[in-house]
Image (tube, rainbow, N blue to C red; front, side, top):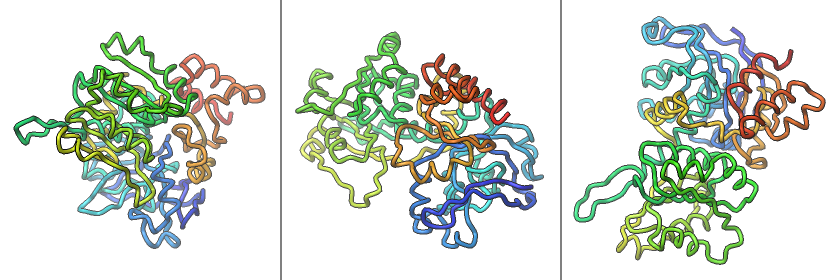
Length: 419
C-alpha cells in the first residue's frame, strides 16, 4: 500500500514523500491516520536530527516518519491481535513505549510509524505494551490531543504532598487547595485549566497568570469565572507583566498563606523563581515546561525547603493510564481538548509548520493528514471565507462555538474540503 508521509532525513530536513509500505507481519497492524497535532518535541527532533536521543543514526539512508499525537482508523489487523482489535475501530496511541529499556518511540524512531502520514504500520511492541488505545468518541482531534492532555494529567498526578511526622507522600494536587498555573494562557496551560476545573481532585482556587493580555482575554472567554464558581472554584486571571512585585500580589490572593500547588508552563527563570516565592507550607512546584538549554537554572529558597517543606518536581509526558483518563473524560465531555487548538492544516503544511513552531507559538497546530490545506489560524477563517466558501462555513461553525475547533467543524472539513 502506498502512503504519504513527512520523513526526517537529517537536521531540519523534513520531506513530504509518497512511498510503499511493506505488507504487515503477523504481529503488526495497519492503520489510517486522520489527524495529528504537532508537538514541540517533534520540532526538537527535527532540529537535532540524529543528535536527538530517540532518533536513529542512519536516517539519511533510512528516514523516520515524524509526529506522535495521532488518531485514526484501524485498517488491517495481524493474526496475533485479531482477538483484541478489529478493522474499522478508531484509535489513539500512547507513544512513550520505553520497550525493554529502549528510547525508540513512534514519531522519532520508526521508518513506518509516525503521525504525519496517511497510512502507517504499528509495530508489535505498541500492542504488546497496551499503547494502541481504542477510542469511542466522535472527533478524531480529541483522540489526537489525548496525548498532550495526558502530559498535563500526568503533571497533576505527579505533584505530591507530605504528612507531618511521617514519611508518607500523598500523590496529586491538594483537593480543595489553592492552585497557581504560571504562564498558563498558552495551549498546554489552557488544557491544565480545563482539567483542573473538571478532574476528581479539584482545587478551591485557581489563579492563572500570563504576560500576554490577548491570550489571557481568550482564556477568560473560554473559561468563565462565573461557571467555575458554580462548582465551588474561584478562578482568577492575572497579567503579571507590569507588576512591581508579582509574587507579593499573588500571595495576597491566598490571604498570605501561599499556594499548595504551582505549575510552571514556561521555561523562564523569572517564572520559576516567582513560583518558588508563592509556595505555601508543604507547597509543590511542578516545572512542566521543558527547556532546550541544558544548563537552565533558577534560584530556590532553601530556607523554605527546610522549614516549610516546599518541594519541586518535574514531569515530561504522561503514561498510558493518563492517556486513558484523558480519552474517557473527553468521551464523557468532561474536558474539551480543543481549547489548545489555534491552527488547522493539511499534510502538505506539516513540515514547514513543524520547523517554524517556535516562531509561531500561539496554540496547537492540528494536521488532517489526508488533506492538502495551508496552515490557517481559526481566527483567520472569516477573512479567508471572503474568497473560499469552505472557510466561510468553518468560520460560521467555530464562531458559534466560542471560536473553538469542534466535532462539527472537523466533520465538515473531512466531508467537503477539496470538493
